[in-house]
Every structure is written in structure tokens, then in C-alpha cells.
Image (tube, rainbow, N blue to C red; front, side, top):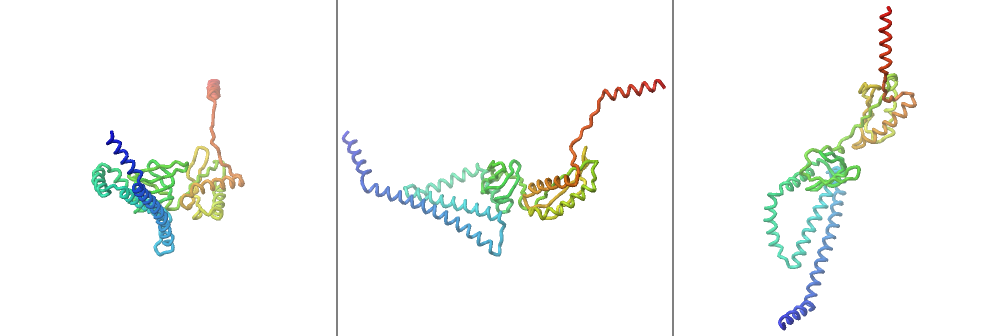
Length: 301
């Protein structure tokens, strides 16, 4: 009993001694300093990255804004991961953990895990080629097999796509097999206009062509003069004329809506009817009575 009491007193004296708290305070201050310096390095590193790309715009080698946003985001993420990893190693060393043995064991374990993590390796390799080949960049509007929207972020493992409804799709890069990018080249707005069969097709075409010459002045998104291709289809109650307009990337939906509005107003001014579906009905009873009357007349003759 006395031995246990003596051990407790020794332990109490040790933990309440100034030497222990001095060491604890030094280690705690060192950890705070490491974290603070890591935060400062990340902030300065991000500013340097932005300044480098800002100066690059004035240099002889130009890159697109899409690619710049992608590379800036990727470099910022890489810097953050590297600094935090180094900070974690320094903190572990500061508290007395043998980091060398841990890294050696982690390397062996990582090699073993790598054979089973084929999907992860595939994601990283695919992500590298997406960025290297500039298949799509941050801000592009793309469509994959299961997702569609604006690219929010491209990483080495995943890509984040934000749908226009606000849904955020996080897709492993390895599962992106086919991509349609709508943001690289100019878009085409396609508008179909219906005119009734009783209407004057020539007058309708003249009215549409007159309006098309006015549109580029009203809408800066239109790149070239819109065209009237002609009769696209003969419907059940209408003649369909097709209009196309080349627009800036991703502006074809907006311009198509504006062209429909302009065409409707102009045709109303010129008295050109835009038809509505028609349905012809007949009474089977009346048809039978007419047939019977015809038969009776034939018999009397």
C-alpha cells in the first residue's frame, strides 16, 4: 500500500513539476507555429499562383481562360495537400512519433493496397489526361452519360458537375468515358415556324428574312446573319419553316427563345396566321342515312 502511495506521489510530483509543463508548452507552441506557418504558406502560394497566371496573360504564350481556371484550381489543391501533409509529418515528429518507420510501413501498405485499388488508379490516370488534353475545363457546360451541367471543379480523382437546377454531381474520372462539350465552339440556335396551309408561304418567307436581317443588331450573342433554310416539314395542319442562327457558345437556348418571340410579334403585325392543330369529325349516323337515301333513289329509278 505504501509502495502504491509512493508511486502516485512520484507521478503527481512529475506531472505538476515545471519541467513537464515547460516541455508540453514548447511542443504545443511548436504545433501552433507549424499550423500557422502552413496557413501562411498556403495563402502566399495561392497568391503567387494567381499572379503567375495574371502575368502570363501579358506574355507571348497565351492560354484560354477555361484552361487557366482549371490549372489554377488544380495547383491550389495540390499545394494545399502537400503543405498539410508536410505539416502533419512535422507535428508527429514533434510529439515523438517515429515518422520514418511509419512512412516505410505506409509505403509497403500502399503498394499492397494499390493492387486492389485499380479503380482509384484508373480515376487518377483519367483525370491526368483530362487536364493534359484539355478535354474540358472549369466553367464548361458538358454532358456525360449520366450527368449534364457546368464543371465546378476538376481533380485528379473526381470531377464536380453542377446541374442548372442546383444538383452537384461528383463523378469519378474513371467512369467518364464519353463527354460532349458545349462551350468550345459556337452554338446553333434552331427555330421552327409554322404557317397554315391557307397562308401565303412566299409572304411568310419574305417577312422572316426581313426580320432576320435586323436581329444581329439587337442581340450581340448572334455571331453571323441568321438563315432561313426553307420548308422543313409538311405537317397535318401547317407548313414548317426552319430558321438557324450561329451564336456564341452556350447562347443558343437564349437566342432561340428571343427569335421565337420576335417572329410571333412580326407575324402578328403582318397578319400571317400561325395555325393551331385541327381535327375533322364526322357523324357515322349521317353517313349511313345518306347511303340509305342513295340506295332508295337507285331502286326507284
